[in-house]
Structures are given as structure tokens and as C-alpha cells.
Length: 139
Image (cartoon, rainbow, N blue to C red; front, side, top):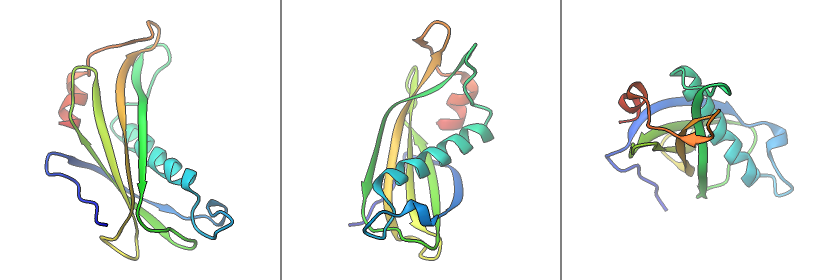
């Protein structure tokens, strides 16, 4: 099965994550929960790079839905290349998508996932419109 990112998604970030021995399970491949950690690491690093980190006394992103589809096993040793995309900015939300492939096997997608992100006013515990600067980044 081949995973393709539709054209309307925008590549916004790439990073390498080393596969650690402890990421594997009893079947000697990366445990399925670890893929979510890889997605989280890429998403947080990207948000940090664009100064979109949450401030508890202010506003920021909250993940309201996350998913991951598994296509091929990842195994130690190696590095995972994560390519992150954004799309579909709405009034208070946008989508993030990511593909995961071994760095030594370019183009062979091992897993793909994503998340719906909502922009929140933390003191009010309420969704608020995406800031214009963020909308420009994810559009």
C-alpha cells in the first residue's frame, strides 16, 4: 500500500529521529505507541520552530484528535525521517499530517499519521480563532 500526501497539504517541517533499542517490542519492531511519540516529537519541534508553543496563562495549540496508519515495520537500528504537512485551516482549527520512513530507504512510507489542532485561550478554556500569523503558516 502506498501513502500519498494530497496536493492541498503544505510541507512545513522535516526531522530525523533515531530509533532506540527501547522503542522495540517483543516482536523486535518499533512498538505501535512509539509511532505516536515520533509524531508528537515532530509536531512539538515544528511548533517550537514557529513560536507556537502553548502558554498556560495565554493561548496555544491543543490536539483534539490523533491517528496513525501502519504500513511497514520499523526496526532498530536506524533513523526515521518524518515529513510534516499542514492543511485545512478553519476558524479555530487546522490539520497536521506526517509520513514516517527510514532515512536509509527514502520514499518507502512505513507509517503516516496526523492530528487535528485547535487554538485555545487557556484561562477561558475556550477555542479562539487562529492567529493570522499561524493561518499564514498552515495555509
